[in-house]
Each structure stands twice: as C-alpha cells, then as structure tokens.
Length: 342
Image 1 (tube, helix red, strand yellow):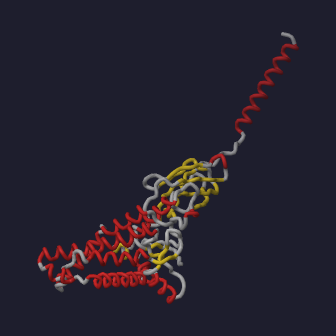
Image 2 (cartoon, helix red, strand yellow; image 1 turned 90 degrees about the horizontal axis):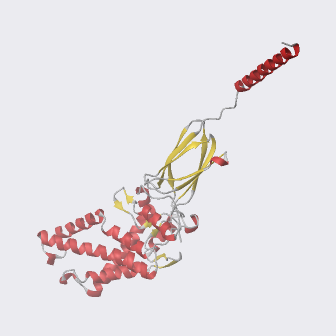
Image 3 (cartoon, rainbow, N blue to C red; image 1 turned 90 degrees about the vertical axis):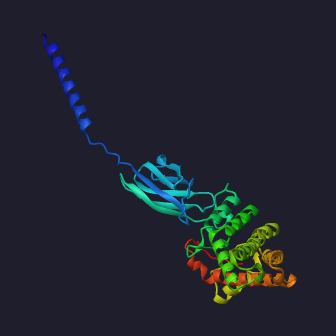
C-alpha cells in the first residue's frame, strides 16, 4: 500500500472523527426551553348572581400570535387553554351589559382561576357595543329588576337604580305587570287584606264564611290587577311613559323627599324627558271607577268612591316612593348601585 494512499485514509478518518465530535458537541449544547403554557378559567354572572351564557371573551397576551376568543357556556363558565405565561388581558362583552376588562399575570404551567365576574347592566344604550338592540338592553335591565325583593321576599320590580335606564317596550311593560300580578306575595297580600276586611265585616253585603271571604278576595285582587295593568302597562304603553320609579339617592333629605312625592305626579317619558304622570293619575281614576262595578251596592258612591279611591292610590304611591328613596334600597339585596334624578 502506497504512502499516499495511507495518508488519504488517515485524513478521511480524522475528518470523520472531527465531524462526529462536532455533531456530538452541537447536540449536547443547551437549548433555551419554552416555559410551559398555562390555562385561565372563570365564570361570568350578572349583578344578581345569575349565570350569563353566550358572553364573548377575548384574551390578549404578550404574544400576539397566541390571542384567543371564546364564549361562556350555559353555566356562565369559560376557559382558555394553552396560554403563554406573562401578562394577559380579557375583554368581556354581552348583550345588554357594559363591556368589562380584566387583567392579570399567568405564571408558567399555572391554572389561573378568575373569581366570578359580575357584569354591570348597561346604564344607557350608548354604553353597549354597536349592534345590540335597545330591546336587548332593556331586557337585561328588567332581569335585574325582577330579582329585586325587599328582605328577599317582597317584590320590588317597579324601581330602577340605573339613572339612564333604557325605556321599556309595550310588551315589556305588560310582562312586568303580569309578573307583579301573579307573584306569590301579591296573592298573599290580597288574601291577608281580605281576611282583615272579613274580620272587621267590611263590605257586609258580601256576608261571612268561605263565600264572603272569596268575594272579598276577588274584589281585592281585581283592584290590584286593574290598577297594575291600567296604570303600569296599558296607559304607559299608550302614552309612552315609564311606569318605574327612578331612584335618586343623592342630594339633601328635603330634595329627595320632594322628588319622591313629586313622582306620584311626574314620570319619565320613553323619550327620557320628565312629564306629567298621566298614567298614574288616570290609572288611579280608572281603577277606582272599575271598582264600582263589583263592590256591594251599599258601598258604592259613584264619582265620590272613584275619586276617593284615586286619591288613596296617589297618596299610597307617594308614601311608597318615600320608602323607596330612604328605606327599601337598603333592604333589597339585589339592588344595583346607582343614582339618578330628573
């Protein structure tokens, strides 16, 4: 074997060894390891604690390529998986609610739990994202009002703690009236009043016993139903007025008291302007007139009874408004924070 041939073999061997060593060294060089991804999850609710389904959530982090979107499920829950660690921001939007933004820091491999996120009902139509209808906003506000109960029991549906609440449609006005009339507490209150009337022998022509009690209960329930449907649904729909009491909550005691009493005679129109409360005034007269049709003949007094009942109705509204302004809000667990006025 020639010397040149041997030298060539030696060079090839050395070259192979060098390449192998280089590859080995490169393969063993430390590579920067990616931090393990984490997850973010939570629940979207409204201010009454009810789950909000279908809320849209957008997750933005430090890496734009890993932004995500999702929607809350029927149970209000949502989750983001494979989230890069670091600062993040979540924007939540839902029909009828004001948008809300959350932020935090996710650590490597962490399962981050966001406490229940309570969305605030939009206080005006301009507070919600473009594309939502005014009816949707009003519907969400009604859902809050329908959960308002004094001491968790007495219905407190006809007051709004949102200063610029969206006006109700006619359908929504009748829906709120119907819910009030069939509420169990309404039935209990009418039943109790009928019992007192029977014990004191009011409307003696009705007699006593079960039949007399049934007549008193029927008359009392007719008073309630006609008053609610006429004064809080029919006339407000025809006259385009809002049947709700708009809580003031600010100012001196005197100004708030005058505001509460005045709200028996003035109200917000569906156009957002304050105007004479024809719905309440005419509703009280109409309910008083209708009562002449079913009360015992000896207890009827034509126009006298009508105006007497109407006056009592307006006085009761004034007293109720005073309680709304100074007492009831503190006793209503689901009341939304807010203040407004004319």
